[in-house]
Amino acid sequence: MEEQGVWAEPDSFTSVFRCTSQKYAETFLKKGEIKFSTPSSWVKYAFEKGEGRGDKLEGTLATFNIFDIDRVVEMYQKYKKYPDLIRMTVDQRIYLKRSRDMELPCFCFYILKQSMFDCPNKEGKNILSTTVPASYFRDFMDDLDPQEVEKLSKNDKPAVIFIHNYKEFEQRIIKTLMALGLNREEIIITPVRYVDFYENGNSGWWDFGKRPPKELAIKHKRFENQSEARIIINTDNEKIKQKLANPIEIGSLEDIATVSNTYLHEGISVSLTADLKLLD
Image 1 (cartoon, rainbow, N blue to C red):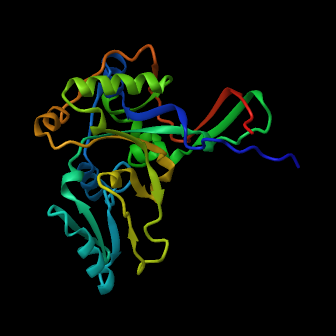
Image 2: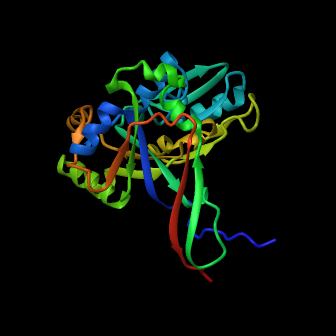
């Protein structure tokens, strides 16, 4: 059996896309309209309409069982330095979060990482293939059946924005954000890491253990199908946050993006040609 190759940078990516509504897709393409949201809004959505587009566990710093007194004392002692600490209780578990970080503007998109493709073992041009699961597209539409989606108004029907030149897209966003007054180090762009908060059972615990607001780039493994990257605006400037509460425009993206006004409820297959080089 022929040996499978291994990617040198499995988390790197070049192709990205984003589920949205047809109304938003049009303004995104023509004006480069970017709408930031907050982790707190995704938590609220999850409690009101269910998990998928929303996530109750956004922004978790640590989680443990409410009856694990030793862990309760340890984690409260560790995180007491944050006066804005939130203690959310769900199903006999406590989730510690920072209210400050839960209100930071964030923008998310799907990334096709190298690790999602089987790595060939030969140099030169290769055709690479992978699939994006149906659950990704259904999560965005709250798992509606295609027949129900057809009944929606045109503006509310789903669309997918495909960005073909991510680096250029990123540069345009950064340029616009810095023009608002942000410093480059306040713009965090990072893939999301997916972990199992309950790997040690319902009585187990999990601790992020790193410097906030990087906890906003951690999500529960249940959402791994979303393969997200995030732009996190790490600022305490209220004027800038107020500006980002409304859409910003980075200019037409018609040269680097396309839109599909389709509900891809069965998922999609992706194929691309890559010119590969073997490394020693």
